[in-house]
Length: 198
Image 1 (cartoon, rainbow, N blue to C red):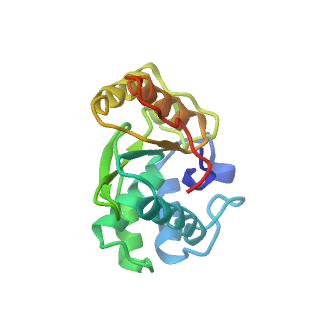
Image 2: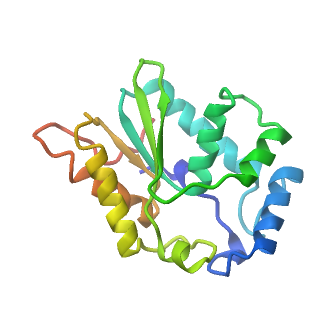
Image 3: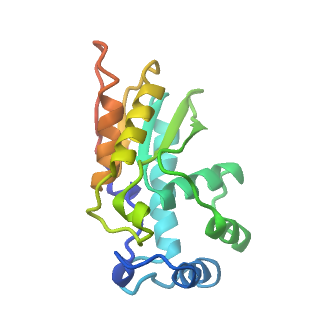
């Protein structure tokens, strides 16, 4: 498990309805005030993106091919856009504007090329109760039955991929998704389910 792959905390917004107005206020901070904390008690966008991208750069450059990273919509979208824009060292206002408009589906995935010529597979966890109810996410939310089925589908998708490591956010919904993938990686080869190092 890797804490650097967690989504950002939402402080006083957690568990509340994810209205257009509330999401718009978050997006405005991302774009126009990236050093201000979001939700009152958590990190700023710049703190968040530095934490995540420093972590991901380490995995992309130093791990064997075909690892899987299981994470959250905010992290998933950040990594995907960072890769699409050429992996910049500094994130421009244009980047933040595009980031604030992105969204992904539960159990979505994409791949990054790593330095050893292989791929790093990045996966968003399955649907959660908060997703289903249209609420800002909480740390301890579980996958729905649909989310468990989506995670199982991911496991089948990677069944024939030789996966040496699965690295996950420590939040339960990501771990549940990772464990669904792990159960298909049992054909007599060694697999580290989680890792603490980069």
